[in-house]
Image (tube, rainbow, N blue to C red; front, side):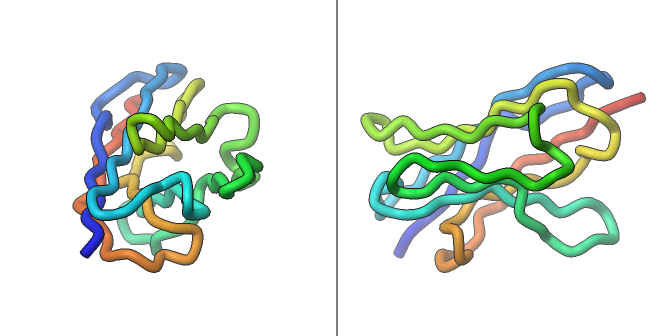
Length: 114
């Protein structure tokens, strides 16, 4: 059974940066198309960024140019670098496969103050 663990969230001011990490025990992330998702209060969970096995990436329009997804195959980690954060980015952030095939982790809370 794959277990996902997200970390790196926190409280930052508008314009700040954070780097989130995702560890997947029981699976190898480089053999899967992976993604970051987020769920803001009162909203449904939605996709933020994806990275495919071949390294190609895609982003939601709301984060293009500010967020960057990457993979460290040696460490079996997925990262999400988030720059120029705004209060609208406040949410719990999760990682999973591109299709959300694995059990969801606890996520990591990102709070951006104005």
